[in-house]
Image 1 (tube, helix red, strand yellow):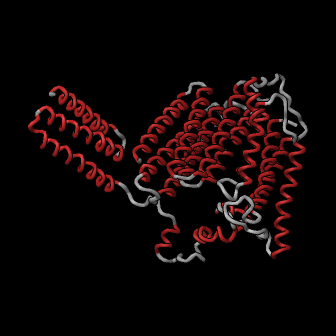
Image 2 (cartoon, rainbow over the protein chains, first blue to last red):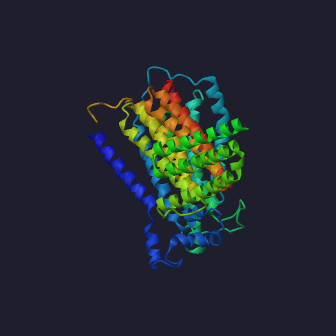
Image 3 (cartoon, chains in turn green, purple, cyan):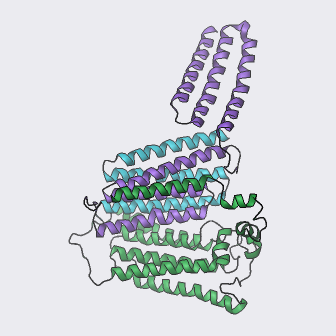
Length: 237
Length: 182
Length: 86
């Protein structure tokens, strides 16, 4: 019964996805009817045409995420935080589940490989979120990569666990920093999460105002958050 | 000289056969068009030229026929292709777009098969592996749609993290899905 | 130029199909894990090739992320199957 239901849901999703991908979008039809013509109303085109001068970011997605729709990103970060906290609360009920048989230790090759790769993965994740305003990527992607690095430690490095106290501290501080940047924007310019740093020239690393700064904090937050989730699930303490 | 011409004709015939086999067996009209155009054009060209080699006095006219086939067959196939193709796919670059629509359909088909497998597999580990495949293919589809940020997010979260999280969940619960509870 | 792209895409598509067939057949779980891992490698190469086709240097980052993370996913599955997850 449940399997039939899930197959039906899958089919509905597949049909919906297929029809969404083939036909013209609603916006296209409205544009043809000259209803949405100028950039003022058609936000997609507006962001596309103005993002680079207004924010200085080469990656338009980054400028949408952090400046045009920064409040939504703050909400997203909050949702992640609530999910991680809920998971931790659920799993730390005090009952420590210790399995009788010992886990097979990682082989030497896996151990060496994971030890060698972990700092490189951290560096790579940092590269992704530091360059979020220039290349594809950003805070969330970089954070997920860092969390995967923590997962790799748990999987391959014999006995070492990520330290969850430090991870929660980093997570909370980074989230706080994000909100503080928004408040500074409020104090300086009058609106929350205003882009108050200089824009700089495109393609430079230090450009695009607060976008790289916010992305760095989001990267730290998401990385430590998801790393903490991995640690909680694996039973590490 | 005539043996060489015979060989060329024979090879041409083989290609004609292969092209027609493709037209018969390939699953949809574009594939059949592919087989019909490329393979068959080459086959016809070689056959005609081979005949011209075998009979040297016929060679000028055979060459003319061969060149005519070489010029017109692709054009007519192109026209047939356009007739068969629905409009609406945004053209970002030449004729690779047609193939990219086919390739996208191929990727979506793989994704659908893998997603169905997730629900069908009783061993939850197999289901996790199939769901990793779904995320993998979804990432490629996003990439194809020129959304590299989303592709990166899907790859990083779907391929690595959710696989790990599911594995931990399986470790803490059951590995085989119960018959009664489905 | 376009037929070169087509040939490569076609070969890669066949490779993906073969791996999918293996994943469907099984019969054991490691078989399926191998199939998905192979698919991941093939599609990493595909992403790099598509970056060349789309002529965008920045798309290579996505291929790199993909390579790293599918590696981690495969390691996770393998470690579970050998009994290394506590």
